[in-house]
Length: 270
Image (cartoon, rainbow, N blue to C red; front, side):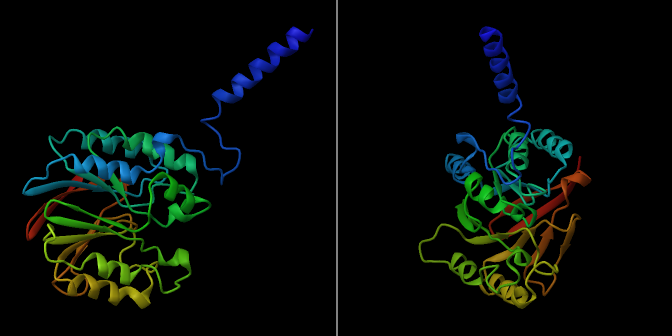
């Protein structure tokens, strides 16, 4: 009888273990493997091992949320390109901020041939999402240089901070765009989830955000997601183009080329 009970217990534990990856005991549970942590730093390290050319080739996508089939199809389409320097995920990796959602998307994105970098979206801040993002990717605000261009990734999810006047962090943004003598970068591109003209962006900081980009005299382009549609316009003047890329649900992404002093972009359906 004891042997039978032991066998049943062993089988039960085995079943629970096999289901562990499918279910979370609590929606706010954070469970990450070692290779699912510090992904921003890991992908930046991969970038440092690449040699950028005079023209950078980037793919911009985002708002994956629950659209896993569309995200997987994006990776398939992206991998048909002969060369991409890196991929930008424009935020809303998850829908409800649950760690398993982040993990499912990373399982898809890690099939890319190239590094991918993310900016946090408003949906990524729901539930325990802020902690998940920090552990899985890293800082909400970060910047790096790649070839002739500095990329500045910044949290613009003002609504999630109750419009406290501190998000986006304009002072931090200004410092990242301050060109120092001897710097290798010549221009900068801003990357954030929510564009400054959206209602979820703090209206008190809208003009300050644009003014900071413009007055740096280094930014011609600002990249965004969130609106679930493609939009490219000079919202405030002719100095900075605000380019929003559609959700993967619509099976679209942006193919961006960047060279010293200029850029071009194509809207790609897949």
